[in-house]
Amino acid sequence: MFATPKSLFRVLAFAEAVTWTLLITGLILRATAGLDVAVSIGGAIHGFVFLAYGATAVLLTVNQRWSVGTAVLTIGSAVVPYATIPVELWLARSGRLTGGWRKEASDHPRDAGWVDRTMRWALNHPVLLASVIVAAVVVLYVVLITLGPPGGGE
View 1: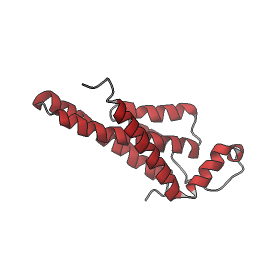
View 2: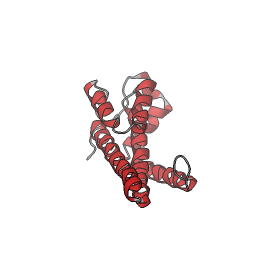
View 3: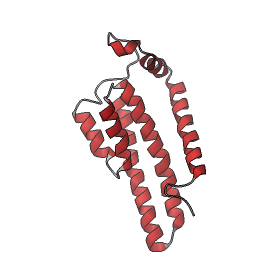
């Protein structure tokens, strides 16, 4: 399903935008109809997808060899409603999503480093990689939910 970094990133960028809609709808329903649960549901879904998008952006930062600036812009786009869509379009049009998963070493000097070696090993074990990423997102999500919503809870 996610044969390329572009296909994975496109799905997460779109999902992040959709969950913004859920959260904003929940906020409107809370303000107009007193449905506090709408924010809880929309916020929970958005929070989980937000973390998954961030994890995906970090993975692609290494795989695509993005600059720090590109990585910060990409991850930061999740904070602004719907910004992941234009950022994804920009990344695709500028060639930053071109290419496949780097499963084999090349002559590039960074391929000798531990980060790239670890990434190649993980990409060659996709079930394990996906399991670790999902587990990390779930653990971080549970910790953040336990701490409470942004801005404090009631």
